[in-house]
Image (tube, rainbow, N blue to C red; front, top):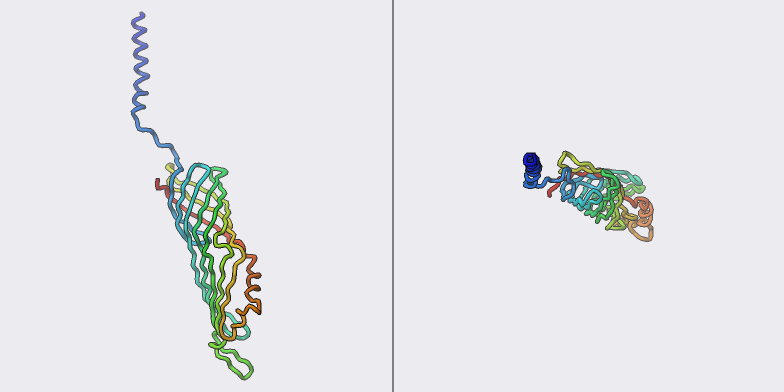
Length: 234
């Protein structure tokens, strides 16, 4: 009886040891749903189209850098003091950004950092018709042309936003984000250049520069709405 009992114990020990030994020889499993790593992708925003690189450190922190640019050109005409003018708005913005995302839930985050912005709209134009002054006609070429340049007070602007992130697929190799926020550019600075009869407009004595800067001083913040998608490289 003792021999039979001893044999049964040996068999039970061997049966329990063999699966464990087999499992030890298997390669370690990759963590399911891994999100940490380096991602690369692109984005579209009110600050332009661009590319980005992200480093997802863990579930709480993501570091990202990228570049975006936007260029719009619009021609129009207007009438001032019975003179027809042709004008062109050349709108340029964008920049290089360095940001950190902090996730207070698995999907929602607060983003902060800086952007080296290239916000530089300009408007140029010229008289398109002659100026009638009584019986005198002054040619449009003598009326002159104008150039208005706008630049931000801060070239390196702080940025703050809130956002939402999700992953696609079980492997979570693809992520997409939507965020909205503001970056602070300060009061835009204006440069005026004029020729001909319009030349007094750019004369500092007439304070047109100060007047325009005061009018645009309310536009200290640049609004951002952004969507981006990225793929994990490794």
